[in-house]
Length: 302
Image 1: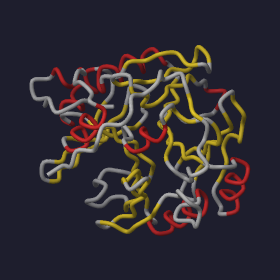
Image 2 (image 1 turned 90 degrees about the vertical axis):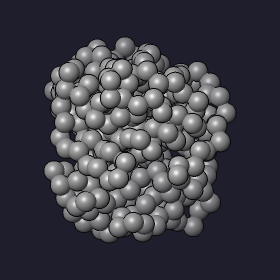
Image 3 (image 1 turned 90 degrees about the horizontal axis):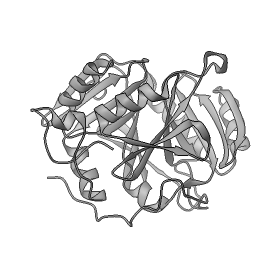
Image 4 (image 1 turned 120 degrees about the horizontal axis):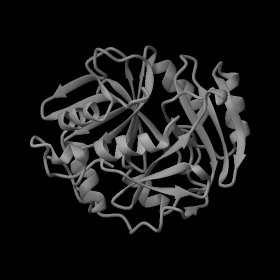
């Protein structure tokens, strides 16, 4: 039986941000897509996940993705000259981007870009020892951060060939399970390493190529968005120029790993995740995948 979290406070307009709280250490704070064609990306993710989009203060090449008014992710236009992977990147809060970048390099990770300053703060694109991409962020966070982090509209999963080594790397780099107040907790649960933020599982590190992660996957960070029906979302992705990489079924829980028209990989899962998100935010269903005859009505993707 799925427990229903209490509703968070109402979100202020997505353009607003809040200062980085001192108790935020190493928490997943955002997900961003680098794409060469933001308009096509908007059409695709709007159809598959039910998102709406608005401009941000960062300029014409950036869009905020919303679901029923809840800030969920961002899309950024890129060009070949920037040499940025056309993919989803998860970002983690750090209190000092320079120090975090130094820790990454010291532990044989790499920094691809940054740290660089933008109007809202400083960030960097990095990779761990295995080449899995992620970002670090020092600066302002989404408005109503405490409610947002308690009910993230997605979850992260790192699929890796070296689960415990990866857990140690990220714990040292992002200060997980440290002595500081408010840092994320790390636990070994159900055959994987769970990162808990304010008590909830915000990310998991699992062995690649096992029943935990599916047989057709390679090491990488994946962002999973809850949907009413993962099969219907996969069909919608195919209709709009994307495709399915693999599917995994465990009881009534279905997960699909998909790609968009430019090859960016993301995940969808149902039904439990969509029940939690829908109940937490009081959201309404209404995506292309919802309108499929096989789609459920328990909630919608974030």
